[in-house]
Length: 505
Image 1: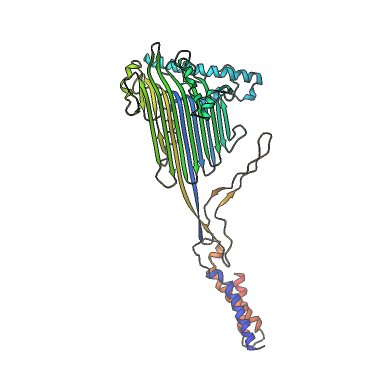
Image 2: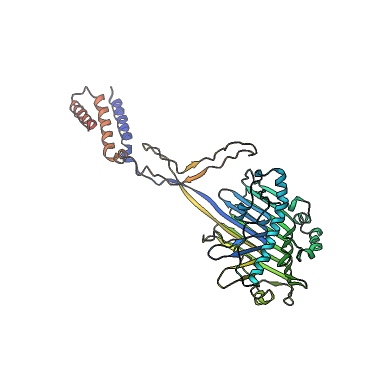
C-alpha cells in the first residue's frame, strides 16, 4: 500500500475521532426568536331609560332596569354578547322565570300574557311605594322577585339577545317586538327620522297619568359578529309608572367592537317628554328631551379618547331653560319641589359600569342622568330612581411575546417545542345544535425548557469523556490498520488495555 493511501486512511480516522468528540466542543448559542403580537381587550356598554334601586349599605344596590341595552366584546378569543329589552332584572330573573319546557304550550302562552301585566304592575307598585316610603321618612326596601302567576316563561316578550359564538338558545342575531305585534316603535327603531316616531304623542296623556303602564310599545334588536362586535338597540314608547316618572319615547343603544388593534365602546340614551311627579295640575317638573352619550375609543398602546356628555333641553317648572347641560341645571338646589325627603338632581355617574373596574388599565366613561333620591339618614339606607343613563367600560392592550426557536445542532439531543398547543374539540352533534364548531388551538403555556444548557448528566460531562472517546477511536483505527507493524504493536496493546479498563469503569 502506498504512503499516500496510508495518509488518507489516517486522515479519515482522525475525522471520525473529531466527530465523536463534537459534544465536548459544542457551545451554547443564543437561539433564534420570533415575536408574536397578541391583542387582549374587553368592553361593556350600558344604556337605560329608568332604573329604580335600593341601597341597603355594604353591598351593591339591587337594580331594576326599564328600557335596557348592553353590549360586550372581548379578545383574544373572539366573543361578543348583548341584549336590548324593555326590562332587566339581573340576578333576580333566575328566580322569577323557568324554562318553557316546564309548561304546556297553552300554559306558556297564557303565562306570557299574564307575566307582562304582572311585571308591569310590580314595577309600577315598587316605584310608587318606595317614593311614598321615602317621602314619609321611612326605610326603603330593595326590589324583590316579582310574583308571577304562572312563572313558566324563560323570557317575556320584548327581549332580544345575541351572542358570538352562538349557542343552542342564543343566536348571533335576534329581533323582538313588545308582545310580538307590529308597532310604531318597530318603525322608529328602523328609521328614526320617520314621522311614525312621533306617534307616541297621541298617547302622552295616558303615559303621564295614573292610567299609565310601565311600557306601552317597544321594539328591540341585538346583533353579534365574529369581529368581535355587538350592537344592541331598543326603543320604548311609554316608560315609567305614569305618576312618579313617565317618559314618552326612549331609545337605548349600546355598541362594542374590536377592529384590529382599535377598541370602540359606545352607549347612548335618548329620552323625550319627561314628566316628574305628575299632579292634577300637571307635571311638577317637565323636560322636553335629554340626550346622554358615553364613548371610549382606544388603540392598543396609545392613550384612550373618552367622550361624555349629557344635554337637557326644554325644562319647565324651574324657570326658563332652553338648552342647558347637566352641570348648569342645578336641580339639587330645589328638593322642596318633590317633598321634604326627596330631591331631584343631575348626577355625573350611574355606576352601572363599575363592576370589574379594579383593574388600573380599565377606563370608564359615565354620562350619569337625573336622580330622584332620598334616604332616611345620611349616611344610611336609601333608594333612588335614575332617569336615563349611559356608561361604557373598556380595556385593550397589545402584548408582544418573544418565543425562542431552537434547532438542535450536530450531536445535540432534540429540544421540546416552545409552546404547548391544545386543539379545540369537535364536540358531539345533537339535534338542534347546528354545525359542530372546532375551537382554535389555545396556547396553554409558553415556558421554554432550555435542555441544551442543562441537559442529562452524560451530556454535561462530555468535556471529560468526549475527547477520550475521540482519541480511542483514533488509536483503534490506527491499531487495526497497522496491526502487523512491529513498531506499532506496543501502542496497540496499550490502547486495547486502556479501552477495556475505560469500558469496565
